[in-house]
Image (cartoon, rainbow, N blue to C red; front, side):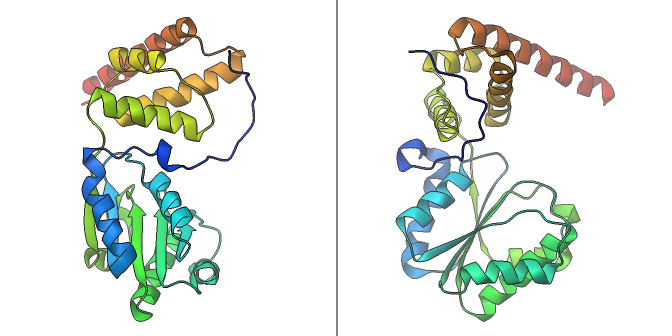
Length: 243
């Protein structure tokens, strides 16, 4: 059956069956299992996407005593207002989980995050921070000081074909968009074998299918993947010349 194209912004769904436990996240998941029992102060980070947001939502769903804050970069509101809003959600829980997008943080949000970490320390709250900072150099020094005392766990992206296939299928499923394994195999053959590039290609194909009102057949996807691969190769070449 062909998938019907619907240009709707559906909320992502999160399920354990769609989160991929691969070698790069084993240590993080083991530490989180201990954190849920004994508490502590953790910082889960990575150089590349590793499914941290998906995992954060799963933990909260399975463990109601954990309170989740999805930090939004907000440069319009004062830091004090942002902290107050977060504390309203966190006030009744001893376990705080902060999921922060990998995007430039406005100074007000970075300062708010510093104050929230201070509140967690002063109130002896158990904290797990899920964050891949966009640019450490632009973060306030007081925030960097507080991050340095957290137990840092570096997650690694998937590398094998089976892991990459499973992660891409999970990403598509979380967006309620069906992508066959034959299409994913084409992506692994014709595109750079790293998760950043593959997820970007997945985004481009999704947007193209909606813009062109095309079904995601293997033939159509093959043309799209080749165009995306050519564009990526041209961008890399331009970057080399620029150096």
